[in-house]
Image 1 (tube, helix red, strand yellow):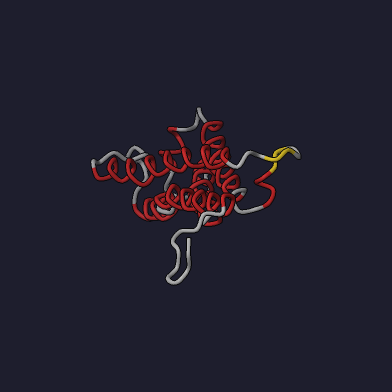
Image 2 (image 1 turned 45 degrees about the horizontal axis):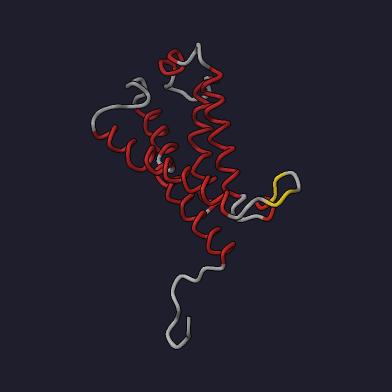
Length: 156
């Protein structure tokens, strides 16, 4: 799940950078809107991918230490859990509602094939929050040794 969460961040971050640099045909009008804010676009992409990479820390040993000091087990659960809920709200709930209401993040500047490519690159973002929450649940189960359900014939 954690690797899936990271993979959900990459297409839109790369699309955004390609749009900003002019490598994405059909996005000149959108590029003009962000011409004075390239740091915002680059920063947004960098933070998005960095958060995706941090999700990998829930399933890798390096995520259990910070500068050689053990991270308390509850800390990643709280931080990643709140983050996963926020991502779920933003991209799985709020974004589709906004799109259905006619509000587009590109302000209606991207059309035809470029719009299809943009939608394809942003579609994985719908899964980012739920996959992050699934990774948090897996981390919690592993770190706290929680069994989901006892099987038939076993005690406990």
